[in-house]
Image 1 (cartoon, rainbow, N blue to C red):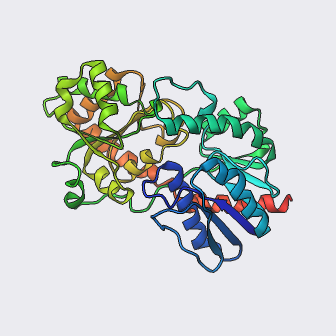
Image 2 (image 1 turned 180 degrees about the horizontal axis):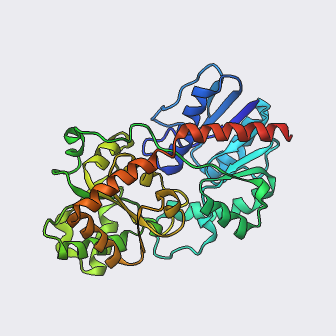
Length: 374
Protein backbone atom coordinates (compact mmCIF):
# COMPACT_ATOMS: atom_id res chain seq x y z
CA UNK A 1 0.00 0.00 0.00
CA UNK A 2 1.05 3.59 -0.68
CA UNK A 3 -0.42 5.47 2.27
CA UNK A 4 -0.51 9.25 2.72
CA UNK A 5 -0.75 10.73 6.21
CA UNK A 6 -1.50 14.42 6.78
CA UNK A 7 0.57 15.70 9.70
CA UNK A 8 0.69 19.39 8.89
CA UNK A 9 1.56 20.85 12.28
CA UNK A 10 3.96 18.32 13.81
CA UNK A 11 7.11 20.36 13.04
CA UNK A 12 5.90 23.41 14.97
CA UNK A 13 7.69 24.06 18.24
CA UNK A 14 4.68 24.44 20.56
CA UNK A 15 2.71 21.30 19.85
CA UNK A 16 -0.76 20.53 21.16
CA UNK A 17 -3.07 17.51 21.44
CA UNK A 18 -3.72 16.48 17.84
CA UNK A 19 -0.07 17.12 16.88
CA UNK A 20 1.14 14.64 19.50
CA UNK A 21 -1.45 12.04 18.50
CA UNK A 22 -0.39 11.81 14.86
CA UNK A 23 3.30 12.08 15.75
CA UNK A 24 3.10 9.05 18.05
CA UNK A 25 0.96 7.10 15.58
CA UNK A 26 3.59 7.61 12.87
CA UNK A 27 6.46 6.67 15.18
CA UNK A 28 4.74 3.42 16.15
CA UNK A 29 3.91 2.61 12.53
CA UNK A 30 7.57 3.15 11.66
CA UNK A 31 8.51 0.52 14.25
CA UNK A 32 6.01 -2.13 13.21
CA UNK A 33 5.40 -1.78 9.46
CA UNK A 34 8.29 -2.36 7.07
CA UNK A 35 6.09 -3.62 4.26
CA UNK A 36 3.93 -0.68 3.17
CA UNK A 37 5.10 2.70 1.91
CA UNK A 38 4.14 5.90 3.74
CA UNK A 39 4.17 9.53 2.68
CA UNK A 40 3.88 11.98 5.58
CA UNK A 41 2.86 15.52 4.63
CA UNK A 42 4.04 18.33 6.92
CA UNK A 43 4.42 22.10 6.85
CA UNK A 44 7.92 23.52 7.41
CA UNK A 45 8.84 24.11 11.04
CA UNK A 46 11.76 24.33 13.44
CA UNK A 47 11.17 21.08 15.37
CA UNK A 48 12.20 18.32 12.96
CA UNK A 49 10.80 15.48 15.07
CA UNK A 50 10.47 12.84 12.32
CA UNK A 51 13.00 11.51 9.85
CA UNK A 52 12.78 9.45 6.69
CA UNK A 53 13.23 5.70 6.91
CA UNK A 54 13.34 3.15 4.11
CA UNK A 55 9.55 3.10 3.66
CA UNK A 56 8.56 6.36 5.37
CA UNK A 57 9.01 9.57 3.38
CA UNK A 58 8.56 13.04 4.92
CA UNK A 59 7.22 15.60 2.44
CA UNK A 60 7.38 19.27 3.39
CA UNK A 61 4.73 21.33 1.66
CA UNK A 62 5.18 25.09 1.79
CA UNK A 63 2.53 27.64 2.70
CA UNK A 64 1.55 28.73 6.18
CA UNK A 65 -2.12 29.53 5.47
CA UNK A 66 -3.79 26.28 6.52
CA UNK A 67 -6.89 26.30 4.25
CA UNK A 68 -4.75 26.71 1.12
CA UNK A 69 -2.25 24.11 2.38
CA UNK A 70 -5.02 21.56 2.95
CA UNK A 71 -7.34 22.34 0.05
CA UNK A 72 -4.77 22.99 -2.71
CA UNK A 73 -1.21 21.89 -1.88
CA UNK A 74 -2.07 18.63 -0.14
CA UNK A 75 -4.39 17.08 -2.79
CA UNK A 76 -1.94 18.16 -5.50
CA UNK A 77 0.89 16.26 -3.77
CA UNK A 78 -1.35 13.21 -3.23
CA UNK A 79 -2.20 13.11 -6.94
CA UNK A 80 1.43 13.42 -8.03
CA UNK A 81 2.49 10.54 -5.76
CA UNK A 82 -0.30 8.23 -6.96
CA UNK A 83 -1.30 7.13 -3.46
CA UNK A 84 -3.78 4.40 -2.54
CA UNK A 85 -5.36 6.39 0.30
CA UNK A 86 -4.99 9.54 2.39
CA UNK A 87 -5.44 9.71 6.16
CA UNK A 88 -6.21 13.23 7.38
CA UNK A 89 -5.62 13.36 11.10
CA UNK A 90 -6.88 16.68 12.45
CA UNK A 91 -10.66 16.98 11.94
CA UNK A 92 -10.61 18.36 8.39
CA UNK A 93 -9.56 17.20 4.92
CA UNK A 94 -9.47 18.32 1.27
CA UNK A 95 -12.95 18.75 -0.18
CA UNK A 96 -11.71 17.38 -3.50
CA UNK A 97 -9.43 14.35 -3.25
CA UNK A 98 -9.21 11.56 -5.82
CA UNK A 99 -8.05 8.77 -3.51
CA UNK A 100 -9.95 6.97 -0.72
CA UNK A 101 -10.06 9.25 2.30
CA UNK A 102 -9.81 8.36 5.99
CA UNK A 103 -10.58 11.14 8.46
CA UNK A 104 -9.77 11.31 12.16
CA UNK A 105 -12.57 13.39 13.62
CA UNK A 106 -11.48 13.95 17.20
CA UNK A 107 -14.68 15.79 18.09
CA UNK A 108 -17.57 17.77 16.65
CA UNK A 109 -17.35 20.76 18.97
CA UNK A 110 -17.58 22.92 15.85
CA UNK A 111 -21.28 21.98 15.63
CA UNK A 112 -21.96 23.23 19.12
CA UNK A 113 -22.80 26.90 19.84
CA UNK A 114 -19.64 29.01 20.06
CA UNK A 115 -18.99 30.60 23.43
CA UNK A 116 -19.10 34.35 22.75
CA UNK A 117 -16.56 34.99 25.51
CA UNK A 118 -13.84 33.24 23.48
CA UNK A 119 -11.73 36.02 21.99
CA UNK A 120 -9.05 33.81 20.47
CA UNK A 121 -8.85 34.65 16.76
CA UNK A 122 -7.03 31.36 16.04
CA UNK A 123 -9.68 29.22 17.74
CA UNK A 124 -12.59 31.14 16.22
CA UNK A 125 -11.15 30.88 12.69
CA UNK A 126 -10.65 27.13 13.19
CA UNK A 127 -14.24 26.78 14.37
CA UNK A 128 -15.62 28.53 11.27
CA UNK A 129 -13.31 26.58 8.93
CA UNK A 130 -14.47 23.23 10.33
CA UNK A 131 -18.11 24.24 10.06
CA UNK A 132 -17.51 25.03 6.40
CA UNK A 133 -15.40 22.01 5.45
CA UNK A 134 -16.42 18.99 7.53
CA UNK A 135 -20.04 18.63 6.30
CA UNK A 136 -18.70 18.66 2.73
CA UNK A 137 -16.15 15.88 3.23
CA UNK A 138 -18.03 13.37 5.39
CA UNK A 139 -19.73 11.60 2.48
CA UNK A 140 -16.36 11.24 0.75
CA UNK A 141 -14.71 9.51 3.72
CA UNK A 142 -14.35 5.72 3.53
CA UNK A 143 -13.86 5.65 7.30
CA UNK A 144 -14.23 8.20 10.07
CA UNK A 145 -12.00 7.49 13.05
CA UNK A 146 -12.72 8.92 16.46
CA UNK A 147 -11.10 8.44 19.84
CA UNK A 148 -13.75 7.32 22.34
CA UNK A 149 -17.10 5.57 22.41
CA UNK A 150 -18.63 8.77 23.74
CA UNK A 151 -17.48 10.73 20.70
CA UNK A 152 -18.38 7.95 18.27
CA UNK A 153 -21.98 7.87 19.52
CA UNK A 154 -22.06 11.66 19.44
CA UNK A 155 -20.89 11.76 15.80
CA UNK A 156 -23.26 8.99 14.66
CA UNK A 157 -26.24 10.70 16.30
CA UNK A 158 -25.60 14.29 15.27
CA UNK A 159 -24.22 13.65 11.79
CA UNK A 160 -26.25 10.55 10.87
CA UNK A 161 -23.15 8.50 10.11
CA UNK A 162 -23.83 4.73 9.90
CA UNK A 163 -21.83 2.54 12.30
CA UNK A 164 -20.08 0.63 9.50
CA UNK A 165 -18.34 3.84 8.39
CA UNK A 166 -17.05 4.60 11.88
CA UNK A 167 -13.94 3.35 13.68
CA UNK A 168 -13.17 3.94 17.35
CA UNK A 169 -9.44 3.87 18.15
CA UNK A 170 -8.27 5.01 21.58
CA UNK A 171 -5.25 7.27 21.93
CA UNK A 172 -2.27 6.21 24.02
CA UNK A 173 0.39 8.00 26.02
CA UNK A 174 4.16 8.20 25.78
CA UNK A 175 6.23 5.68 27.73
CA UNK A 176 8.22 8.39 29.52
CA UNK A 177 5.10 9.23 31.54
CA UNK A 178 5.85 7.02 34.54
CA UNK A 179 6.71 7.41 38.22
CA UNK A 180 9.99 9.35 38.59
CA UNK A 181 11.81 9.80 41.88
CA UNK A 182 14.23 12.65 41.10
CA UNK A 183 12.28 15.56 39.61
CA UNK A 184 13.79 18.68 41.21
CA UNK A 185 16.02 19.78 38.33
CA UNK A 186 13.01 20.06 36.03
CA UNK A 187 10.11 21.23 38.18
CA UNK A 188 12.26 24.01 39.68
CA UNK A 189 12.36 25.64 36.25
CA UNK A 190 8.66 26.35 36.74
CA UNK A 191 7.87 26.40 40.48
CA UNK A 192 9.93 26.46 43.68
CA UNK A 193 8.40 23.62 45.70
CA UNK A 194 6.73 20.29 44.84
CA UNK A 195 3.32 19.25 46.14
CA UNK A 196 1.27 21.72 44.11
CA UNK A 197 -2.01 21.34 42.24
CA UNK A 198 -1.43 21.28 38.48
CA UNK A 199 -3.84 22.60 35.84
CA UNK A 200 -3.11 22.35 32.12
CA UNK A 201 -5.46 24.48 30.06
CA UNK A 202 -5.87 27.18 27.46
CA UNK A 203 -8.29 29.99 26.66
CA UNK A 204 -10.94 27.69 25.20
CA UNK A 205 -14.02 27.90 27.47
CA UNK A 206 -14.35 24.09 27.44
CA UNK A 207 -11.20 23.89 29.58
CA UNK A 208 -13.26 25.39 32.43
CA UNK A 209 -10.49 27.63 33.70
CA UNK A 210 -12.78 30.10 35.43
CA UNK A 211 -14.65 27.57 37.58
CA UNK A 212 -11.41 25.79 38.38
CA UNK A 213 -9.93 29.03 39.70
CA UNK A 214 -13.04 29.64 41.79
CA UNK A 215 -12.71 26.10 43.15
CA UNK A 216 -9.08 26.76 44.01
CA UNK A 217 -10.06 29.90 45.91
CA UNK A 218 -12.60 27.85 47.90
CA UNK A 219 -9.90 25.24 48.56
CA UNK A 220 -7.59 27.93 49.97
CA UNK A 221 -10.31 29.07 52.37
CA UNK A 222 -10.62 25.56 53.88
CA UNK A 223 -7.09 24.17 53.59
CA UNK A 224 -4.51 24.25 56.36
CA UNK A 225 -1.74 23.45 53.86
CA UNK A 226 -2.68 25.91 51.10
CA UNK A 227 -0.83 24.30 48.22
CA UNK A 228 0.09 26.44 45.24
CA UNK A 229 -1.58 26.10 41.86
CA UNK A 230 0.61 25.69 38.78
CA UNK A 231 -1.35 26.76 35.67
CA UNK A 232 0.36 26.02 32.37
CA UNK A 233 -0.28 27.32 28.86
CA UNK A 234 -2.28 30.37 29.95
CA UNK A 235 -1.60 34.09 29.46
CA UNK A 236 -1.63 36.49 32.41
CA UNK A 237 -4.02 38.89 30.69
CA UNK A 238 -6.61 36.15 30.24
CA UNK A 239 -6.20 35.03 33.83
CA UNK A 240 -6.32 38.58 35.24
CA UNK A 241 -9.67 39.14 33.51
CA UNK A 242 -11.11 36.08 35.30
CA UNK A 243 -9.61 37.22 38.60
CA UNK A 244 -11.11 40.71 38.34
CA UNK A 245 -14.52 39.39 37.32
CA UNK A 246 -14.69 37.04 40.31
CA UNK A 247 -12.82 39.19 42.86
CA UNK A 248 -10.11 36.59 43.38
CA UNK A 249 -7.18 38.99 43.76
CA UNK A 250 -6.22 37.70 47.22
CA UNK A 251 -5.30 34.26 45.92
CA UNK A 252 -3.01 35.35 43.08
CA UNK A 253 0.16 35.09 45.14
CA UNK A 254 -0.54 31.33 45.29
CA UNK A 255 -0.88 30.91 41.52
CA UNK A 256 2.19 30.23 39.36
CA UNK A 257 1.94 30.73 35.59
CA UNK A 258 5.00 29.54 33.65
CA UNK A 259 3.40 29.63 30.19
CA UNK A 260 3.96 26.73 27.82
CA UNK A 261 5.62 23.61 29.30
CA UNK A 262 7.46 21.44 26.78
CA UNK A 263 6.21 17.87 26.58
CA UNK A 264 9.53 16.37 27.69
CA UNK A 265 9.22 18.27 31.01
CA UNK A 266 5.64 17.23 31.71
CA UNK A 267 6.44 13.82 33.29
CA UNK A 268 8.49 15.64 35.95
CA UNK A 269 5.73 18.21 36.46
CA UNK A 270 3.08 15.50 36.96
CA UNK A 271 5.34 13.55 39.33
CA UNK A 272 6.07 16.61 41.44
CA UNK A 273 2.40 17.60 41.65
CA UNK A 274 0.20 16.67 44.59
CA UNK A 275 -2.74 16.21 42.19
CA UNK A 276 -3.77 17.06 38.64
CA UNK A 277 -6.94 19.04 37.97
CA UNK A 278 -8.50 17.92 34.68
CA UNK A 279 -11.84 19.64 35.09
CA UNK A 280 -12.82 20.29 31.48
CA UNK A 281 -16.44 20.70 30.48
CA UNK A 282 -15.91 18.44 27.48
CA UNK A 283 -13.18 16.21 26.06
CA UNK A 284 -13.27 13.70 23.23
CA UNK A 285 -10.48 11.69 24.89
CA UNK A 286 -8.11 13.54 27.24
CA UNK A 287 -4.47 12.45 26.89
CA UNK A 288 -3.32 14.54 29.91
CA UNK A 289 -5.67 12.46 32.06
CA UNK A 290 -3.79 9.31 31.05
CA UNK A 291 -0.38 10.95 31.38
CA UNK A 292 -1.01 11.99 34.98
CA UNK A 293 -2.40 8.58 35.93
CA UNK A 294 0.61 6.87 34.35
CA UNK A 295 2.83 8.97 36.64
CA UNK A 296 0.87 7.82 39.69
CA UNK A 297 -0.54 11.31 40.28
CA UNK A 298 -4.14 11.44 41.55
CA UNK A 299 -6.48 13.19 39.12
CA UNK A 300 -9.66 15.12 39.78
CA UNK A 301 -11.60 14.99 36.53
CA UNK A 302 -15.10 15.60 35.20
CA UNK A 303 -18.14 13.34 35.10
CA UNK A 304 -18.95 14.53 31.56
CA UNK A 305 -18.27 13.44 27.97
CA UNK A 306 -15.41 10.92 27.58
CA UNK A 307 -13.65 11.47 30.89
CA UNK A 308 -15.49 8.75 32.87
CA UNK A 309 -14.78 6.35 29.98
CA UNK A 310 -11.06 7.07 29.94
CA UNK A 311 -10.58 7.58 33.68
CA UNK A 312 -12.48 4.42 34.54
CA UNK A 313 -15.12 3.57 37.16
CA UNK A 314 -12.82 4.29 40.12
CA UNK A 315 -11.63 7.72 38.97
CA UNK A 316 -12.40 10.89 40.95
CA UNK A 317 -15.32 12.28 38.95
CA UNK A 318 -16.91 15.63 39.78
CA UNK A 319 -19.44 17.98 38.24
CA UNK A 320 -17.14 20.47 36.45
CA UNK A 321 -19.77 23.20 36.73
CA UNK A 322 -19.72 22.99 40.53
CA UNK A 323 -16.63 24.70 42.04
CA UNK A 324 -17.68 23.51 45.51
CA UNK A 325 -17.52 19.87 44.37
CA UNK A 326 -14.04 20.38 42.87
CA UNK A 327 -12.80 22.10 46.04
CA UNK A 328 -14.28 19.35 48.22
CA UNK A 329 -12.27 16.70 46.38
CA UNK A 330 -9.09 18.80 46.63
CA UNK A 331 -9.58 18.90 50.39
CA UNK A 332 -10.36 15.18 50.60
CA UNK A 333 -7.14 14.26 48.80
CA UNK A 334 -5.26 16.47 51.22
CA UNK A 335 -6.85 15.15 54.40
CA UNK A 336 -7.51 11.47 53.62
CA UNK A 337 -4.15 9.77 53.15
CA UNK A 338 -5.65 6.32 52.50
CA UNK A 339 -7.90 7.71 49.78
CA UNK A 340 -4.94 9.54 48.23
CA UNK A 341 -2.78 6.39 48.10
CA UNK A 342 -5.65 4.41 46.61
CA UNK A 343 -6.04 6.95 43.81
CA UNK A 344 -2.31 6.72 43.03
CA UNK A 345 -2.65 2.96 42.46
CA UNK A 346 -5.94 3.26 40.57
CA UNK A 347 -4.33 5.62 38.04
CA UNK A 348 -1.29 3.42 37.46
CA UNK A 349 -3.44 0.34 36.80
CA UNK A 350 -5.87 2.19 34.55
CA UNK A 351 -3.14 3.72 32.37
CA UNK A 352 -1.80 0.25 31.54
CA UNK A 353 -4.88 -0.36 29.38
CA UNK A 354 -3.76 2.23 26.81
CA UNK A 355 -0.71 2.45 24.55
CA UNK A 356 0.35 4.00 21.25
CA UNK A 357 1.33 0.53 20.04
CA UNK A 358 -2.29 -0.62 20.32
CA UNK A 359 -3.39 2.56 18.56
CA UNK A 360 -1.02 1.97 15.63
CA UNK A 361 -1.96 -1.71 15.33
CA UNK A 362 -5.63 -0.81 14.98
CA UNK A 363 -4.78 1.94 12.52
CA UNK A 364 -2.80 -0.43 10.28
CA UNK A 365 -5.65 -2.94 10.38
CA UNK A 366 -8.01 -0.17 9.23
CA UNK A 367 -5.70 0.85 6.37
CA UNK A 368 -5.65 -2.76 5.15
CA UNK A 369 -9.43 -2.99 5.35
CA UNK A 370 -9.96 0.22 3.35
CA UNK A 371 -7.40 -0.91 0.76
CA UNK A 372 -9.25 -4.20 0.19
CA UNK A 373 -12.54 -2.35 -0.28
CA UNK A 374 -11.27 -0.11 -3.07
